[in-house]
Length: 327
Image (cartoon, rainbow, N blue to C red; front, side):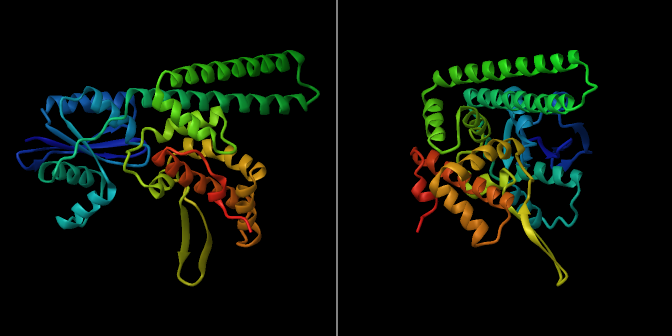
């Protein structure tokens, strides 16, 4: 049996193919569409039976989908803890990309093989729509900021202002078209429609925010816990302490899915203003626990994500009285 391990990084992929119990030399590829095709070709040429890669934040997902769609082999996406425990069990003392890839290939050869569950096509389609909507919204915000800056300078020619204003109108129309098309796509699927209703029941989550949140959470494994969602979003606290002289306040790690963080930010900000119970929690963090406003918003984002996890698991709408108990 031939196996392969792929160590996934933000920009690079390290591939090691194992044949007859021996690992071959490492091969490196870019973590993009072209690199994915090159890896697929290398795996087919080597007649690989099983491929194992580690779940690495958001960087492994597109590769996993590409291999699952086109590969004539089994694919397993391994929990990082399982990979680390296996490395310890075989007494691997060195950690480099080639060694990690080799360990994953050996894991695929020796351990129980659990195939990766590819998300539904509908979920992948919503993810693509959500990412496009996020890109258009970002461009629209940048154009508005540019217009404001140009308009504050008297020497800016009128035709430049008109040109930027035209771009703003075009982007606004594109955002609206993408929103409408995505909602139409959601309406065709009963499960997606139910999830949209559940998300919109949360104070501060409107249609665009709901779409962006759906795009990121629907493709996650069903057995992920709420804490894993938080870590995946990069909203988990990061502590910085060393000896007795360095003891900084905890910050969010930001090591994870920035799309989900962005999607949660405005709903958290809005809910902290307009929802009595969420605002109570927000003020409690600031007044009683001494958090800064931005830290409190991040904590609200984190708790909202916990709430969304429970709501989708139990198929229930939002109950703000459970978010924070008011005196």
